[in-house]
Image (cartoon, rainbow, N blue to C red):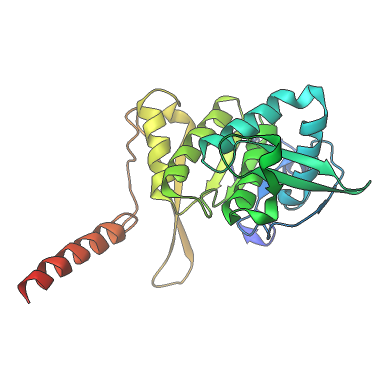
Amino acid sequence: MSIDGKEFLPIKAGIEPTHNLESFITRLIHVPGLRGNPERTYKIAASEDVYPGSFEKYVAGIISDWTRLVKYKSKYDILKEQLFELGLASNIKASKVDDTSVEIQVSRNKSGSETDCVNIADVGFGVSQTIPVLVALIGAKKGQFVYIEQPELHLHPKAQFKMASIIVSAINRGVRVIIETHSSILIRGIQLAVVKKQLDYKKVSLNWFTQNSESGETDVAKSGLDERGAFGDWPEDFDDTSLTAEQMYLDAVEESFCE
C-alpha cells in the first residue's frame, strides 16, 4: 500500500478483506513529519471529518470551530489541558482575520491569561509542530486510523514521555493509532502504560524497519508486547548507541583526570 509515495505493509487491524480500501484511505488522518513553519495567519480549509492529504492544513480551521462552537467545548478543553501537560502552553485560541483566514495564538506562560496570548509564530517551534498531533488524536472518531510521523518532533524528553500517555488516551477511546518514531522515551512510555494496566498489551505491536545489508531492500520485523510491557524482539542498536555514547563520555572524563 502506498501513501504519499511511501510504501507500507498492509494493515490488518480492523480492516477486513472485504473492507473498501478507498474508504479507509479517505478517512485516514495523516500527520506528516514535515509539518511546515508556523504562520502569522492560516487559511481555513473546509472539511467534514474527511481530511485528504496532509492533516496540518486543516488544523487552524478545526481549532477555530473548537474555539467558537459550544458542541466542541470538551475537545477544546482537552487541547488546552494537553498543551499544558506537555509544558508548551496553557491557552490557545483562534481569532478570525477575515472570511477565509484565522490567527492562532497561544499563551507564553502557565497563567493562561487572555492578555498573555501571542501569535504562534512568536513562540517555540515545538508548539506549532505538536498542535497538529494533538488535534488529530483528539478529533479522531472511534475506529478511525491516525498515522503520525515523529510525534516527538521538537519536544523535550520530558514532553516526549508525556506524549506517550496522550497517545494511550486516544487508543483507549477506540482511535487506531499508527506511529513512526525514533524516540525510545516515547516507546518506554507506551511500555509503562501496559505494565500499569492503562493499556491492553494486545493492542500494541512494533514493526522494525531495517535495510538488508546484502540486497539493500527494507526488512520488516514485527514484535508484540507481553503483559509486563516487554517486547519479544528489541531491535539491535536501538538503545545501544546512547548507552555507548554515555560510556565513552564517562571513560573520557576518567582519562582526563589521569593526564
